Image 1 (spheres, rainbow, N blue to C red):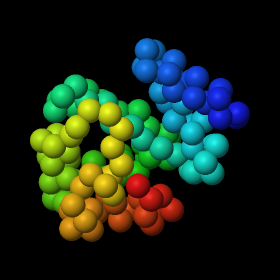
Image 2: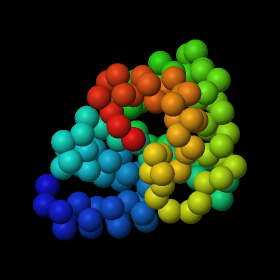
Image 3: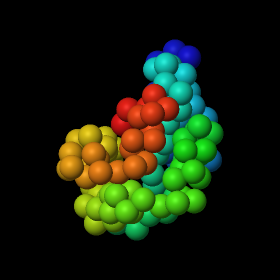
Image 4: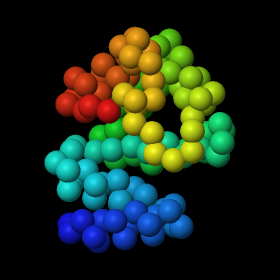
Length: 113
């Protein structure tokens, strides 16, 4: 998909949230990634998430047996999130990322951030 078309789709999704999943899948395809995820928050209140199927499967696996490190990281995100796009490695303290079983599970499947 051409970059300008993908950029247009990001702007469209900002006004039509139902489009985010196809935009995330398009970004993944354009970058050679297996999938992607985006958390949706209002201030510090989580509203939901959009994620590719492979991310959804990993998340379902993680929620059936929640890890204390994952729960701690989610709490940190809710308390410290700034508006806009955030990258995990720049947002979370390294020791928090290292102690999160969900991150290890994602890395095992070839995911980074």
